[in-house]
Image (cartoon, rainbow, N blue to C red; front, side, top):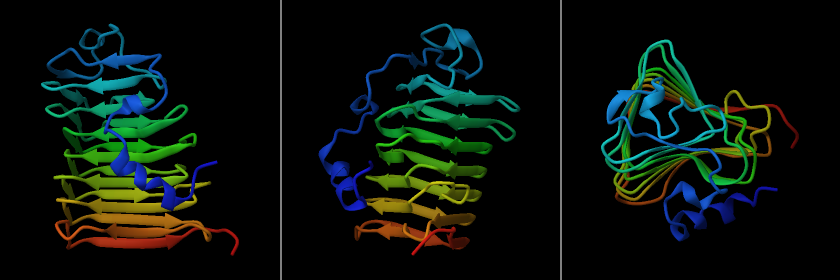
Length: 231
């Protein structure tokens, strides 16, 4: 079982920020294509396009674009410092983590989503569903985290997060026990779009800003919703 929320957050400070904290990489695919499109096999270290079981790494200098109408998939994704991932309008990326890991998605570089980004069906235990550590997010599309146990979008350490689209945390869940948008350290989070947070009756739904240097500016919509459940 997943440890309670109070035991999850200490991992944030104790663990190095790397997806290597999780299970051994049996299907690691590293971007080698410089500036290019996700759906080109020769851009990947395995000479094949990632599948739903792939652990994807985009390193420094990698500029990856998921082109319009393409549906990309992965088990985990790490966007390292100096790397960037762009999801174009009409494109999608679905991450369904398999087994234990620190995070389904870790971003120390840049993530630009104008399409649909989904993180779901996460098999516990997991610390963070999506973890921004010194990276940036520009979201003008739809960003959906669901069925994660803790459907947690964690933003920490010099992040720049801009949302003009829709971020859903737990709203499409069947088994999410808690939802949280956590903002720590020198984070600048600007929302002019919509953020929807949902919980079960026994879960939590919160925006947690726990550092005086963190800034959350909201000119959009922030909605809290309770799903069905007991108690």
